[in-house]
Image (cartoon, rainbow, N blue to C red; front, side, top):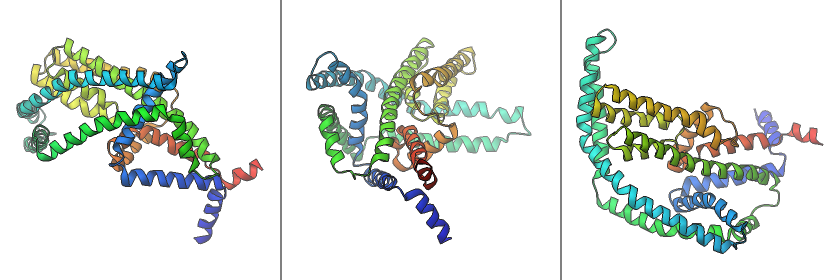
Length: 355
């Protein structure tokens, strides 16, 4: 057993560049795992800086110095963010509160329909099972809704922290964009000399992360706006709230779309019953999801490494379980990182062939 482990170790860690890459990966994952909650503003700032670096570089091509370009882009970003928050959040919050209040009535209506199923299919569905299921769902949703709409001292503390982050994050983004070269050089000074393999993986991943963040933000905006227009045309209640949920659902591949289908269908059934309007809503929602998965995603992420759906779902479950929201957001880039490291990691056989 020891000989097998020894041969494996020599085969995989004979290259000092590979050892450096392994140490850097363990250090990075360890920092995020143990201090991820403390570094949340920094992670948010890095994501926004990746997003805004492209317009800054574009302005520099027109002869504007980097500081001026950064100031111009930051003013535009902050202005758009403030308008979006002031225009969208109050409506979404109001609709969310109304949705929570009417949720028990929606569940009662859904239960009434489900209780008719045992009469139609007595051999397959049991009435007691349906009642128990609906009671459990009702209790879970109502308790979650009450937690959302109720304000406690802890909520006020979270709001205060959020206000602080609203100041810290833009400052971090400004200096990350303005002093990008200086910060990168400062970080490079502390890295080991044998970092050729790490540099190769970072070059590939840097391009992947840039494309992923930009594409994901554009996808959220397009899916959210299109969903709102469709819901508003159909005169669906809670259209803004549901559109925001549908837009954010693209953060979780496959699982997000399936999860958001439940509130969309529940609101439509509560508002119209099983009429033609309800089926129009579900068909339109299905078309949006189909266009997103088969047209929008291939266009936006055409340069992304092809990953199997099983790999994506496993990445969402693993990294989401470890790092929460940020793990879900970066699940695909992290899965791509794992794939890039596995492909780039040298073996003793590869070294011998190269020699």
